[in-house]
Image 1 (cartoon, rainbow, N blue to C red):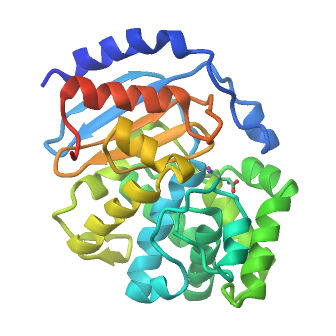
Image 2 (image 1 turned 180 degrees about the horizontal axis):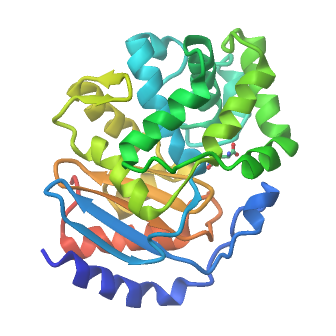
Length: 304
Ligand code: GLN
């Protein structure tokens, strides 16, 4: 398969979409990112790498980091995690409050903000220094010791965190946050602020593409069955109320973030990271989704 040639043709095909969508601006520091960037990197399990565009430019991972938080929380809690959240698609926006109220403070899945706040509570409760454990894990997964939080992004998000604070309060009211709300929110914004390039992100997701091997990184361990199930949750819940559309168009498990990144895996074959800051109405990258749609179309490979 000549992936590099396929990437070149995808770049030509997506040009008309270059100005479509709008970058996230509800977090002030994200509004300052140049929206006219696009990059992709594929890492195969055989060790090949194919990349194009701005694939070495770091960007804000935002909700993509919920995948790393899930690996940590599952490793610590096992199936007990599912007593505090579900694993069903929500059909709602990532920051919606309505369903959470109707369902008495039990988030539908770990990739909603509510689910991630509960995971943040688990990690704050169980780990002596959750920030250090988190960054240590992502550094190991990406093979890049310089990866870090972006304190300015975290502070910027915290300064306008009206909705996430409301979600955390609702969770606390229902007893689904054990610790101090401010501490949990602070950790959550730190997680969201981590920056990586497509190159580093694709490398970090190899651990999930390699679903037949157990996960054992930085003191966090998952069985191969748990890795497989993480992919299942990415497939059904990784794109909020656009999870069905992503499944339909792309057909790979993946996770998006409002920084415009998407990480996806073709289990047993490769991991891929794409980035384009302009988002559609559901908060997913316009260029990112189209790129992956064309990738699985041209390669005729998806999980279906
Ligand atoms: N930090 C963002 C928020 O909580 C993450 C959302 C996202 O990437 N979908 O709103």
